[in-house]
Length: 153
Image (cartoon, rainbow, N blue to C red; front, side):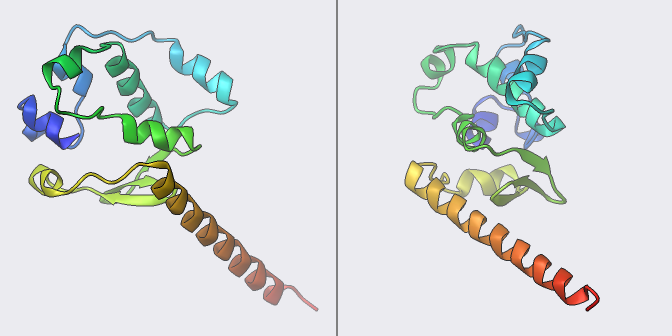
């Protein structure tokens, strides 16, 4: 997203800015789509997830216009598509964005621009998912053991 902020001259609004609105201020969004999506997934979505999904839908409404204007740029929302397709959500953290399987620290735009993109191919994401599954299983086992130790005999 940092390369888009740089290209659209909104560095000062990094890391949170409405990319679609900056790209084309006339963009609109159907107000009822969030409710339909929540009905489909069977639960309410978190506020930050709703904001990102709204931004993604706005961006998608442009079709090929962004690629025509910036052909060298990747889709800014593809990493989030991968997160959501794998059942993830995002949450605001203290100094970071929390994904279910990772924490992404807030950095200045200059630092972000200097970083290579995080690979989002299936094999890399499978590895991240497996590490998170293992971490969750270990955490549950520790809690169960601690609870068993505290039960009266």
